[in-house]
Image 1 (cartoon, rainbow, N blue to C red):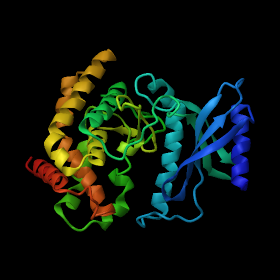
Image 2 (image 1 turned 180 degrees about the horizontal axis):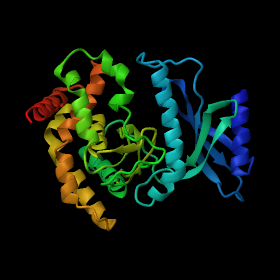
Image 3 (image 1 turned 90 degrees about the vertical axis):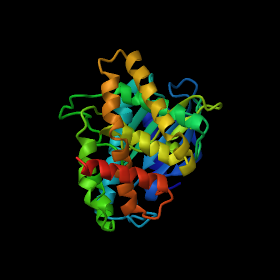
Length: 341
């Protein structure tokens, strides 16, 4: 057993107040070699954490190895910040959100090694054990609708119309992993184009919207966990959760799981599904927000949002399969919109 593994088990034993647990599965390695996610089982029936639980172990590598070559100090710091944000979300936000939107329950989080403050563990409940064992790489239109309902609830629960300086506290002030100010290396790598010249304007349009909420920030299909019959869904991976327009999650999600033909045929209807759920969720929460005003503003930002993500892809992976005719048409519509005013 490695020294890190020994430290991990010692710290878990202290946090859980038991030694009767073992790692039963490596779920996945973290992006760019920054650690791993493991499933553990606690066999101590007298312990409050009896049963299975998940440990996200962040252990940054000595040297970075990004799959697409995007290494560097800025990228490294962005990742470190993202794990601090995720720990903050689980510790101070997740358990109050869970009754409305299924997410893992927070158990504990702590630095693993005092000599390496960026090495930490986040301990949370196991969604498989809570009835969400299914993972998907793509989605039917119906399954997409189920995820849009989760996003609508999440956005309705966290709506803000007057953002204060301390909101969202200790999360990303502007959520999503492709936010322009955190992706200047990729921006500089873009070929000269109208999209590149318009990047700051697109960014400003999104960030200056009146109605903001918490956005998941990486709402791809791989970060949703489903019930056996696919009728219920939970979400994981909150490294890039922060403030912003709800369309960021919606557009990114739809592009993550539906092919170009399906988007062509069902995009408008799925947008309607989202806004219908948003209205219902606002009403159920007895919110004072006017859903019609939010919908009016956010619908105007649909193409703007798509173009903003297209800007990221154009620098990060210009030949990416997500850069389809559909996405380019949406991007052109956004550019025409912002330059016609």
